[in-house]
Image (cartoon, rainbow over all chains, first blue to last red; front, top):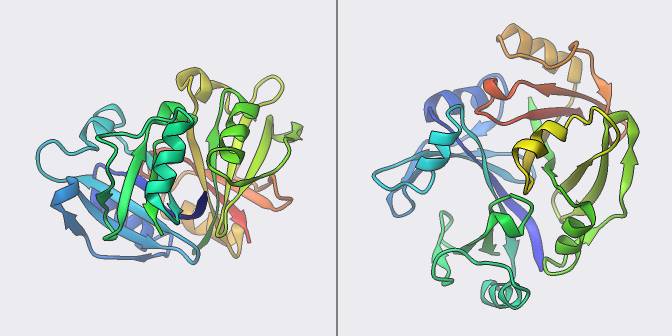
Length: 134
Length: 134
């Protein structure tokens, strides 16, 4: 079912400082900040040869990462995104196996313009898992 | 400086259950359990098309992930590993920029037989970063 690791997301308290670390001492290719008001985050993409790191910072009220940053003031690894060929088939298989899909179970359009779903961390070794249609 | 994302490590309280989830409902290619007494962990490798997930479970006394699992009983994303071409040059650059290298600062031979170093999470947005010689 799962394919490529599409990205790893790190929630950060200071987006420009985090970008400076990745662009500077770590020498990676780093995008400008991209506000994503529909997702309640501003994102900076770190392009690695085989995948991406997404640096996330809260945007607006009710950001989905606000509580995480309150608990983890220095930031932290927030979620991991796997690609799937067919997100509806993946969802149905997961639900049939008793895995919990977050929200109303309907895919939303994610940060890359493709349908995404999030899965309950308790069902995946404490890791928040995002699935993205490949 | 940093190249490929070599792997993402998830600490898990039940290694066989975690492997069953990745092998089963997630349909990934999953290795047998590999004890690594020198590192205080038993590892199962999940092979994705572009990178690896490492499922880590404590092995022996003083496992480096024991405290993490005490704090995160369900498990959680433990660290992220970036490849570098020259680990000693990378270390010296990081130290010159005030970034903290864990332990005595000398690379150890990691799970893949190559030199590795760990960097202080507080200097990298709360994420524990491993560097591995490519």
